[in-house]
Length: 149
Image 1 (spheres, one colour):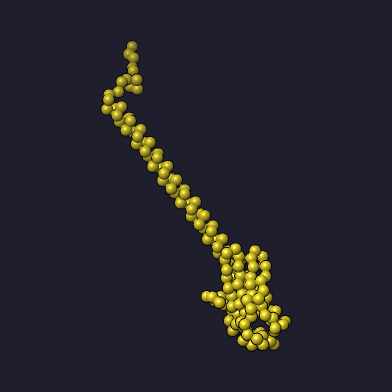
Image 2 (cartoon, helix red, strand yellow; image 1 turned 90 degrees about the vertical axis):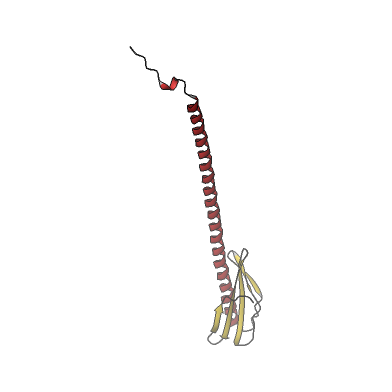
């Protein structure tokens, strides 16, 4: 009867122990490198997500501010139709923001200019409407977002 000894329990040569330690270090360093790369990817994705959300919010606020500026211009135009002496210089609270109607330029039935600003949070949009004729039928020369006024 022969007894077979398992090689695991047999003494290993010195070079085998050295190789085993080297493999352990390689595995440990590999795990560390993979962890660092994973953390870098995760933090980059989180940063991109936050940046995207901020951009989206900015775009939404910009659209809302433009809507407020348009609404104020429409309001001012209606006020002028009802009373040609309407002077503007009002601030209206609408929804999540405000809009300002600057003093109306011009007088009488022709060549009037309405300038408004819409503000949501810190986002400001402007509208300028040039009116060729107020009554009996309102005729606009332009309705635009100017660079500045």
